[in-house]
Length: 295
Image (cartoon, rainbow, N blue to C red; front, top):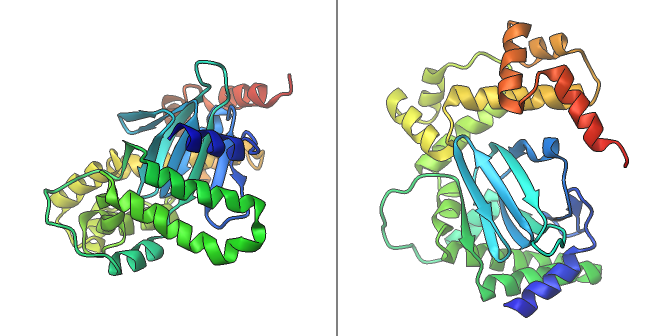
């Protein structure tokens, strides 16, 4: 697998220290250090393969660390904090990611035999070791960057193979549940989409439970199992992340942003902002400005 990793590193090394599009649908890559505020964000469903260095993802109180030759699966939108690290030799962090398309996963599942019944599993994010077969599919996908005329014909086949290899792995059940209506994960995903669209509105758990066709107690239990957050904590993270992005963009004052994302009290907003990001809004913005200042 080392030769495959070395070639993948060479291909991904053309990325920048931010999400860099490859010209291949749903495939992006990252190289080097990334500002902390960009890593504390809402992560979309994806398969993320680390090629060099390491990354830590924290959702709620759960943290995962992944090193080269491991991949991260996330099957619902999750507000998370991340940190990337150079390798022990000082080589920059490198990773590639595939944004998941539930419709494509569902189409692939229709062509596969039904899996054997297993135990009830929870969670929507985890880490697994990569296999040679999965690396090979990724390698053929990234080689398309040098053959853009082949992307339309070959990228869909390579994407299906990446998904197939993940489905065969220890966390394949996440993709199955994500794309299978009626599973607890799929039901929770419906409510997550609603919260994301309406994060500034008052949240009524009973309404969300009805949306998921679950009792209130079962909804709470499944939501926490999937996201590592309660529904109210999830909404709060969305509000604060949106507020931070607006403040960084310089579009409004802290008070107007607080009201805009759904807070009734600017003081409460400032307290909860500091609890999540470590500093109140004005000092956090000063820290971010210092991070972005050329050195």
